[in-house]
Length: 165
Image (tube, rainbow, N blue to C red):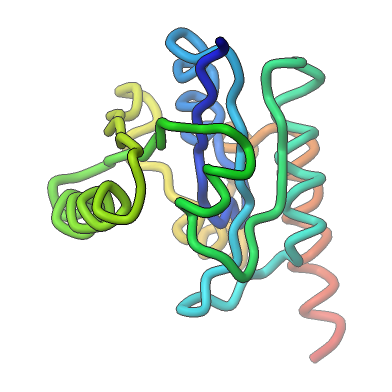
């Protein structure tokens, strides 16, 4: 029986930090479902379909990685559908822990599922999608923080938004 894990997030956009966690997750699971989530508390820059395409571009064609949309359901219900019993969560700072800890306990209350907290590699600790978007919005250099296809898409999306104004 294969070990299936889920790494869920908004990935708006996927960063080198996300890619790092995806690659390292594959060392202890056979299949990783990257669940591109809608978050009612956030207004994403990219649509869910665009974010899914960017995740696919960033992770390449590794057959162990499956990119799917997570919308309108609990993560534990999605996990049942894909046969996952393990959730991967990244913790960049101590401030992330309280929220993630509560979510892990609630998920375990709802279903027989475990959460693994992973810390980023030292060179990606400071990277977050929101900071990357903000830096890019003001013309800062973000190419080394993103896969080249993602960096190009981010620059194009920001230019598109400016043109709409």
